[in-house]
Image (tube, rainbow, N blue to C red; front, side, top):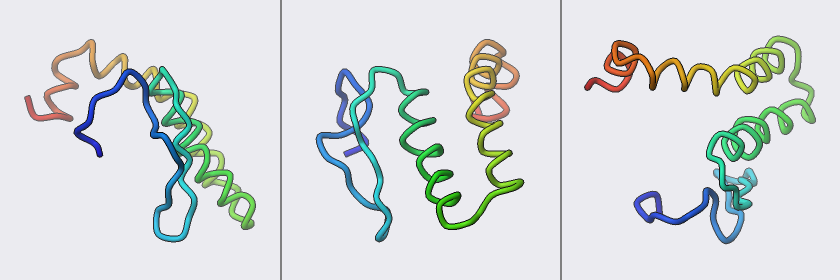
Length: 86
């Protein structure tokens, strides 16, 4: 499944992580897909079960700065090598 290349991110149907729903709506943008359908969705599930405070604040902050982190990492070979080993 993860080896298959396609022009979008997502899958033709939703699936589960254990018994938890995992959304897979198609998106042309990986960052949006990850932010809304992976981390954001899990944060919403946690909030609906009463988890909040620092968990929500840190998750929202990560969603907000994720693109900036990727740009810095990909533009600076030293960071890229430290994270990806080459």
